[in-house]
Image 1 (spheres, one colour):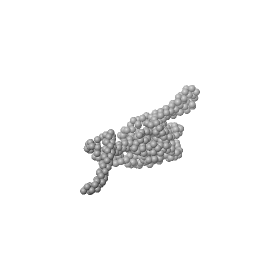
Image 2 (cartoon, helix red, strand yellow; image 1 turned 30 degrees about the vertical axis):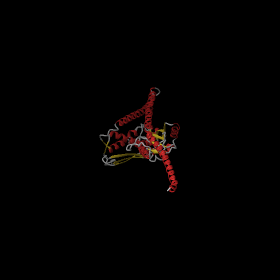
Image 3 (spheres, rainbow, N blue to C red; image 1 turned 90 degrees about the vertical axis):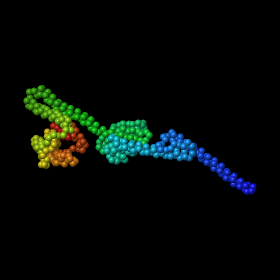
Length: 405
C-alpha cells in the first residue's frame, strides 16, 4: 500500500505543478485584460458619451467589461461614421446649390469638385480638366492668387478676364482650407461673373462720352458759323446762304439726336407695359418704304417685298412699330451696297407653347459688306457704331438699333 502511494506521488506532483503554472498564466492574462478594460473605459469616458440602448458597464474588471467596452467603441465609431457621411452629403448639397460658381482643388491644382453654376459657366466637364477649366487654371492672375493663398493662408481676391467660352469679366476669391477636406480639397475658388456690371459701366461711360460729343460737334459748328456771319460774311449773301444751309443741317442733326434720346427714354419707361392696340403691319411697311424712296432712288437701290397677305395686324403700338421699321430700313439704305437690293420679309410665327398667341417675324436684309462677329454683342448699345465716320456722315444718331431693340 505504501509502495503504491509512493509511486503515485510523482504524478500528483506533476499535476500540481501544471495547475500552479496554469493559475499563474491565468492570473497574468486576467491582469492584462483588466488593464485593457480599464484603458477602454477611460478612453470611452473621455471621448464618447454613454450610448443609448446599452446597459451600464459592470463594476468588475473581467471579460464582460472588455466585451462591453468593445461594443461601446464599435457603436460610437458607427455613429461617428454616420455623422460624417451626413455632413459630407450636406456639404456636397450646399456646394452644388450655391448660386455662384465654385471649384474645389487639391494642392496640385487638380479639380476635385465643381458645382452646377461652375459647370454652366465653364462647360459640363468643369468637374474634370475640360479646356475651359484648363484655360481658367492657367490664367496667370488666378495662378498668382492660388500661390499666395497656399503660401500665406487665408483668402485672396483678384479680378481677371476670361476669353472662353465667351468673354467674361470675373472676380475670383481663392480660400485655403486648413486642414484640407477628407478628399484632399485644399483650395476653394469662388467665381463671380462681373460681365453684366462691366458692360453696364462701359455703356454708361460710352453714353456720356458719345452724347456729349454728338451734341458738342453740331453746336460748335453752329457757333462757328454764327461768328462768321457776324463778321467776315456779314455782307456776303452767297456765303450767308451756304452757311445757313449747313447750320440748318447741323440743327436738324441735333434735333434728331434729342428726339431719339426722348424716344428711347419713353420706350424704356414703357417696356414692361403690354401694347393695347393693333398695328397694321402691311400699311406701316409700305408707308415707311415710301417715305424713304427719295434716298433709295438716290443710291440706285431696289426694294423687294415678300409679305404674307394673311398677316393684317399685330398687337403693337403703331407709332413705335413704325419707328422700328423706319430705323431698320434706314440702316439698310445707309449701309447697303449702292445699286444693291433691300429685301423686306414678313412671316407668321406660331406661338412658342400651347396657349401662346401667334406672332409675326419681320426681317430687313441688305447686301452690304456685313458686320464683323465681334461687333454683334454690342450692336444694340446706345451710340455704338461699327463705322463711326460713315455713320456720322450719313446723319445717324447711333441710337437707331437701341430703339429698335
